[in-house]
Image 1 (cartoon, rainbow, N blue to C red):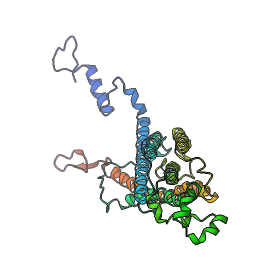
Image 2 (tube, one colour):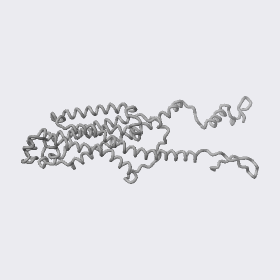
Image 3 (cartoon, helix red, strand yellow):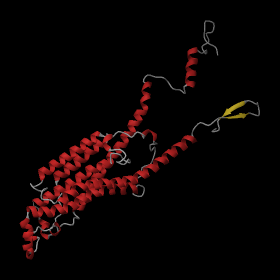
Image 4 (cartoon, rainbow, N blue to C red):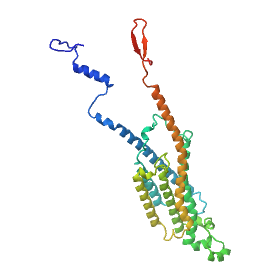
Amino acid sequence: VSFPDATNTDGNALYPDEVAFVTSISAHSSVFNLWGSSSTCHILDIIRIGRASLEAVTSAFSFVFSGCLSFSMFVLLSSCTASTAVPTTPVLGSFLYTQIILLGIGLSMAYTDGEKDSMTRVPPKNDTTKYSFRENKRMYVGGVLRAAPSAVTPQLLYLIVLGELMWAFDAPFVEEYCLATDNMAQIVSAKPSWTSIIRCEALRDYSGPAKVSAGAITLASLAICTCVVSASFVFRTEPLFREPPWKRNHLWVGSMLLSFVLIAVYLAATLERGSMTSLPWYFHLLFVLTPFICLWLSEVVKKADQKHEKRVAMMRRLQFETRLGMWSPKESTHVIDSQDMRAENRSPLI
């Protein structure tokens, strides 16, 4: 290589800086040290935050979808009630549930911090998404099973509330249209059971305060069940007993407390005075236990889903390591040319 100097003025000669530049390109695999390259040290944090955000948004969407499905099933089951008085769905309560509580909790769930081992798992890449029932039977069946308990249990509570409030607020109506006249002597000494009132034919056209209050309490039960079940959706696959949801999402706790306050204010504004005190003790017990029963059933379904996701993650890991080994650089073979007996390095891929 000739370098230009005072005696060598050839235009094709190389400068020492040019040789050093080309050598540095070969030595560093064409990595240029440009301005801003120091920000590449944060690339792992960017990927980690991106994965955590995707996981949190997926969980939030699953919860909102499950809540909407519960409300749809709740309205559908209202027309299939065992009582002759079909429960009414209050407009104000429906707006509070669908537009404030459900969306508020779902939005707060999108701020969940990522798991510690999120960077050790292989994310799905270039996977074709199919929405047919045959391809996603597990997802659809699991979604229905997690949404159904929150819609069914309020309908059972409605039967108790309607029968008890009918006797508390409209006892003359019940005595005149729903009870036999030969049992009037027993009515004076003992209160009739709610099971003997809910099948009264006269309740088909009834629209008094007992029916309105029963509908409000039923919808409030649905909202409370949905709020409690949301704890099962904060982590898409992790069970609750491993890590409480409030440790990685404090905003979700605030949205839960605000939702309970809004439900209490709604009941105070819509119920007739003395509605809750007129109900028996076993109703209050069921009203408190049913949300936790729904939460337990949701965890059972999520446990089965966790096994499937674990197998899928292991398969992705196996495929990733297999492809990594397949396309990794191979050791070059030393081949002797028979013509000129010169050694050449040939890649086995060529």
